[in-house]
Every structure is written in C-alpha cells, then in structure tokens.
Length: 327
Length: 262
Image (cartoon, rainbow over all chains, first blue to last red; front, side, top):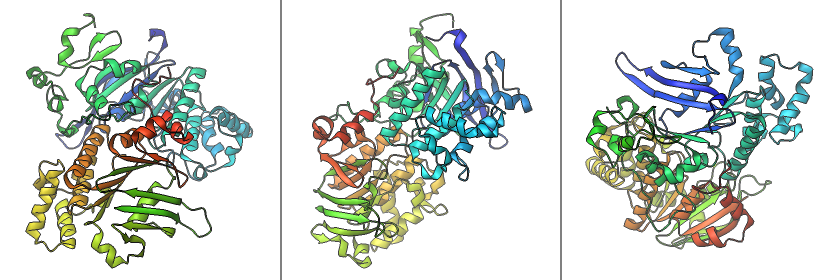
C-alpha cells in the first residue's frame, strides 16, 4: 500500500524542545519519524499537548526542529533559508482549525483564495475573477461567493474557503489541523467527503490532525497515536477498532461514546490526569496510567516494534511479538 | 419538577424567534439532553430556564414552572434565593467563569458564604470536601492554586464542585465536555451520572454529541431551527425515529468499525 516511489515527505527522528529556563526544557515532540505518501492520508490523534500540532507545523516549515531532518523528495528542507525556503513552501500547504480567524476580515473571498497565486506570480490581476470562480466551484460553492466577505458565511462555507486557498497552488501535501472540530457533525461529514474527493482527483497527500479517533479511522490510511510527544502506535485506519494494541490506544477507544456501544455498560475511563510535559517520566511515558505497567516500563523507553505488517507498537508487552528482525 | 410550557424566545421584536413553542417536562432525577446543531436554540432554552437570556432576549409566550412556581414572574431577589441552591449551572468553559487573579479557594469560600451563613473556616472545609468528592484528590492544593495552574479537565471539575455544593435539585449544563479531551470527557460524564445517583439531581444537558446523549440521558430532545424536531428515549431516537432530521444526524456521526471512506 505504501510504495517507496510515492514517498513525498519523510520525517526522520524529529525532536522539538522549547527552552523554558536555563535547565528546563519542554520536549513537545520526541524522536518522531513519520512519512507522507502520495494519495494517502496520515492521521495523527492524541490528547491536547501530545505534540501532534508541533509535528505538523515542523512538517510545513512553521517551526524549526531541534534535531532530526525532514526530507522532501529526498532533499532536506530543514536547512533551507530565504528565497529557497519561500519557494519550497508552495508544495506544502495548511488548513487551520478556526475558519473564523484564519482569514483577514477585510479581504473579499476572491482576494483570499487568489493571494497564494499572486505570491508566486501564477496569475495576472485580470485573471483573478475567473480563477476565483474556478476554485470556488472546486470546493462546491457558488461562484458568486467571490465577492463576499468571510463574516457573512457559515462555518462550513468558511472552511471550504480554507480548503480552496490551500489547494490554489496545487500542493503535493496539505496539512489539516483539527479542521472539523469547530463544525457540527453533519457539516463535518460534508467537509471530510469534499477533502477525500479532492484527494482522489488531485492525488494529494493529506496530514490530518484530530482528537476524534472515530472520525480519523474512517478515512486515514495510516494513523499515528501520540502521547506526550511520542508516537506510541502506528496502524491503518481500518484496523483501529479491531487490532489496536497499545494500552493507550485501547484507553482512547474505551472512552469514545459510540452510537453502537453497549449502553448498559458503564463507560471506562482513566482516572488519572495526563502528566505535565515538563517532567515526562523516565522509561515509558504512559507508565503511570497503564494497567499493564511492569518493571521494565519504568526503566527503559520502548521503541516502535513492528508486530504485523504496517502495524507498529511502542510497548514492552509486544516486544516479543516482533514480526521482522531486520528493522 | 420542571415544566416548560410552550415557550417562545425572541431576541428582537421584529425578527424570527430563536425558540418556538418549546415544551419539556423533567422529572426528579431524570437526565434530559438537548441535541442539535449550532443556532438551533439549545442554549436559549436553558438560559430561559435560568432567567439569564443574553441581550434583548425575552420569553414572549408560554410559562416555565419549577416545582409549581412560575419562574418567569421571579424578581431578582427571588432568583437569588434559588440560584446555586435549587438550580445551578455548569458552563462550557469554567476557566472563563473563574477570576484569573484569585485562587480557587478564595472564590469558592466567597461563593459558599454568599449563600449560607458559614464561617470562613467551615466554608473552606466544605470546599475541600466538595472538590475531593468530584475526584480531585488533593483538595487543599487545588483550593490554593490559581485557575491557570489547573488543566482544562480539572477546571471543569471545579465548575461541577461549585455547582453541586448545595445539592441543587436541577443542574443545567451547557456543553460541559465539548472543550475536553475524550478521556477527560468520559471521566466528567461518569462524575455527572454519579451525582444523579447520590443526590437525585435532575440534569438538563446540552450537547452536540449524539452518542454521548444516548449514553447518559433518559430523554433526548433533538432541536432544529428553534423547534423540537424529535424527542423520545434512547431506543426511540436511535432505532425507531421517523424524523428525517434525526436520521440525517445519526448518519453523520462517525462510528468505530462503521463506514469507511477508503
């Protein structure tokens, strides 16, 4: 399913830590390696503060990693500067969480969605109206919206404008940071459908951040579950409900309210709080909330082990189920 | 216990009403969820019950009875007697309700003493005890912290502790979990279910999460454009509903192991 030829972005051992004071560091992302493939969706789930946004922002180039490298078609883009960096940005675009705040309130829709094209001298001023209409039709909005301002549109319509702006430059990768969390469920569904239609048509790679595991598993080819800056499990979306192995993924699944759940059973939840990212414990980051915690978990940090094809788990319980030795 | 009879809420005289002909009866110890999209008038209903409609909002028609007392004719003095003690409310973002430059304890003590003649020390102890009952183990420490030192889930639980001090008969909750992570959400919901068991509190909760509503409520009301689109118990809404809108909402909820797009 994941051909090496289709690899677009390869993130290798990305670490980002913020210095708070002389001796205190906050590690938002710890040794994260993930890949973006053409026409594939990578979903990242986790609680707030687990580093999912930080990772994506590094992939887009909004943050510089402390260590590690990002390869875009085999070339390291973390070292780029100035004009070279600016030109490289057109290949990776981003859609933001709150469509109400992502646009300049005094720009018309046509100016908003054509701005990236002007930045890279793709069109002339005279072509703006027709290009705007074309982009609006792509996101299933009437062409007459070009003359509107963002404030007289609904949340779902605004998010479509966000998608149109991100796709204006025909990027290879788009990153969606919680784009549906401010929307109603029915609107959320239409936005996701639109995104997937566009992916099929344009063969783009999508990075999708969400805290809603039930939503992401519906369409992500690969899901990375993050906890306190670490990737704890990588598996395909379809396998989430059946094959999730890591205790944290299990706990997430248990706390989801689902229409098909057994309503007579009490909902299971972890009683403890997520530890502060300032003092992540030695060893496994999940140790103090894990019901299977062993001695080795306190001493040694688990790596990601491949237990099945395309299924990686970072948990000492699964160390012995290693599927291949050479990895 | 609470009876809403055919109310219509209007925010400006000429415009379209936000809530139209809404009726609902809640029994002692019953949990009722209002579900609907944004702008469907869920919050207006709850705010009408607690007499706190924003702006020019007025209940232009109908009546609301709380234990056979007409709430709409209450003066602000009457309200003060029942706020917090008989009816209380949890907001979506408790962090915004708390004063950022005062400790939780100082606000909690003030709140308790505003309602009952407790000494400072008694009120403090009461506060600690309430916090511990809502699964915040180290109550003393929470009382001494400032809101910014607590996580979102902890602040929300502080909000519940505030609301439950005087064991109110009716608890109104406006999307209490939508700003929380799913693991914290599950904790909060368990907490609220426990309150119902311990105190027999009736709860009216607004949520946009249909599955959550199905899990916790005895009665679900689906709202659309200010009107009741559908109402009934869990079984009716999930399996036997005839309303098109309910079916549409249900099909939009992502489900584990359900439909896959790819």
